[in-house]
Each structure stands twice: as structure tokens, then as C-alpha cells.
Image (cartoon, rainbow, N blue to C red; front, side, top):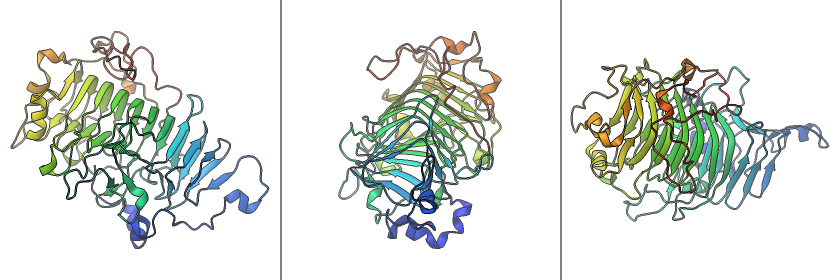
Length: 467
């Protein structure tokens, strides 16, 4: 997670305190009078309309595909507890500068697009002129377990999301319901969102905070986010068929006790244009405070079939790591294809090293190739000055069945506008993967390495617009 303010927000500093706290979720920070654009011009308008969403959603509401929905400038649109926002296939949502769509704890989003008609949430800027971080993206808050405040006095099962103050009651997340249901995100693209309103209070392109396993996330793309592509704060949310493309910070960032599952994940980390800090494929933490690195629930994702593609010459902030694992986190990573990152897999501290020793942190049946491009090209980072973990010794044990080999990926895997992640015929990645568990979530036929096997599930519904 980057810790810096977005330049264009600095000019709005006089409004920051109001937008983030004092007025709460109901205050409209735009210049609108609370009416829909078309309705204001013609109350009897029929057919497609451009509708400004000036008010929070407090009752069940449907956004229809024939209309375009605009989130006004600096407006946090809250879908409130008890309400369900249903979004029809093919609907487009445009975020003006600084706007955010927030699904609060107890609310639901039912956004079920199709391969032919995905739902698109994007910047309100003109096509070809969209910039990462122009709007705040999608934030989903749930009631599943987190570890943010379990060691506080008194301990608590909930927290306030970091971009809000305690004056925003809609900003709370976490609880005790691991199966909490925040709705459905299926065939959804979120583009050009995520920003740091002020230091250490940031939105991502897509954020799940305390989201439970009852939520369905399948065929989701995060493209050109200003901060992380997807960040997960605790909870148990599972994801399948996910593409995180060209984020300016981390691809998938997990914190605060996330214990979800993922299968079929692409992170194309090849174009962090405009980024000013290190930018990693994965970044995984358990708890941000050293005294609480062992806090429970402990971050422990289970991820099968992932492809992480890096930009080998990216040297900003000492370069990007394929994976940064730290602060007491654990995780089970199978069938990963990780290639072309400036730095390899980095384990940062002894609390995390202890998870390797305990068998709670590992990579298995995976391929590493052409990583550590800013070092000695051996796939592994240089030793740290203190508390170093020997990542090669930890992850390349024979029993883990990992390989360092050319996976035979096409050059188009590095293409920004029209990528493909299907390995070439005869690729080493097409065999040698572990069989995923038969638990009702994982596809047990995916015994290849990487996110894509013989069939490319990313085609048809994804898009990679450039700015």
C-alpha cells in the first residue's frame, strides 16, 4: 500500500475534512441539486438516460442497462444496511473525480453481468483520456472476521475502514459471520479507480473489507488502479477468474486475517505508469503492528492457478517484488507461474519465517522464471541486512515440486492493450500442477501451472483501455 496523497486532491484540501468525516455519507459534495440530468430537462423522458446518483441508496434499487449512472464529484455513494443494489448486465457506471461506490455492512450488490455484456465501472473522463485514480473505485464492507482491533483495549471484532473517520458510521466493517453475504460480482470490470485522499487513508480500485464467503466473486477485472488492484482486509471472501491488470501499486494486497480462496488469477504487472513507489505482484500482511503480528484470525489465503507477469526493468522504489510476504502472514500457493519481476519472492521478518517452518506458508507445484532481473537473475532477492530468510532454501525444497524453467509464455503476455495469457503449445506450464481440492469451490481439472490452460477464460469480457 502506498502512503502518499494524490496530487489533484491537494487542491481540494479545504473540503477533505468534510468529505471524509464531518458530514457523513448523506452529504452531496458535488454541484448538483439532487435531480437526475435527463429528468431535470424533461420529466417525461423515456429511453436511455444519464442519471446522476446524488443520494445514498436506502432501499432496494435497480440500475438498468439502458442508462448510464454517474457518481458525482467527491460523492461517496453508500448502499446502506438492508438495501440491495441490483445492476443489470451491460450497465455502465461513471465515477467523477473523487467519487466512490460503497457497499456498506449489511447491504448487498447484485452485479451479475455476462461474458457478452459485462458491467463496467470506470472514470467519467473521455475514452483515451482516462487517468488511474481519477475516482475512488468500488469498496465492499462486510461482517466477516478481521483482526484489526482484536488486540486493542478493549478488543473489538470491527473496525472503521482506513479512508474514513469514526464520524462516518457507514465505514465500519468486520464481525463474526464468516459466511456473510455482500452479494454478487460477476463479469464486472472496474477501471481507473483508487486514490489516496490523504496520507494513510486510501482507496483502491477494488476493496473488500471483512467480506464473507457468502459473497460470489467470479469473472472480475481490476484495470489501471491508482493504488492496489484488489486489496482485501480480513474476511473470508473467495474469488475465481480474476484479472488484475496494470495497477500502479500492488496487484493483490491482503491484510488483517483474510482466509479466502482464489482460483484462476492473472496479475499483469507490466505498466505501472506514473507510479512513484515499489509495486509488487502480491503483498500479504497479517497485522501492521509488530506486537500483533501473530493476531488471529491470521491471514492465510489458499490460491491455486495464478499467473503473475512483471516488468523486469521497473526500478522505482528499489523495484517491484513478485511477492512481498511479511508481518506474520501465512498462505498456501499452488500452481503459480511467476515471471519477469525485478525482484523475486521476499519474506520480510522472522514472524513470517516462523510460518514457513510451521508448514503454513509455501509455494508448491509452481514455476519461477526470469525474476530478480535487477539482481543476479536467479529468481530470488538478495539477503536482507538483518533477520534474513533464505527464500530459495525455503520454497525450493524437493517436496514442493517447484521448477525454475522457461514456461513458454507468448510475448503478448506483456502487451498492454491486447494481452493474452494462454501458454504456447508445448509449454512447460501445461503440465505439472497439483490437483486442486474437491471442496465445491476449486476446479479439480486445473492441473496446469498458471491461471490459463488450454482454454483462455479471459477473452471476450475483459478490456485494457489505455490513457
